[in-house]
Amino acid sequence: MIFESHLLSMVVYAAFVALVLALIRRPDLKSRLRYGLLLFAVMTAGALLFGWLMFLFIKK
Image 1 (cartoon, rainbow, N blue to C red):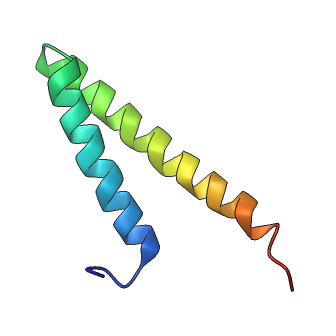
Image 2 (cartoon, helix red, strand yellow):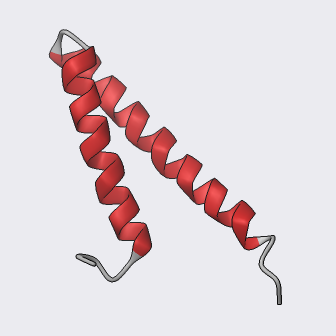
């Protein structure tokens, strides 16, 4: 594993995916930046929320 933290790995992955999708889906710089930041925020928040929900179902 490259990173020790799963959270850091997830954030780096979200950044790369948001960058690539913003570059191929939007024509101008301003909309690319806005779309990329929105994608990054949604992917990071969604992963954190999903991880928190999975934590609720851990058997003790």
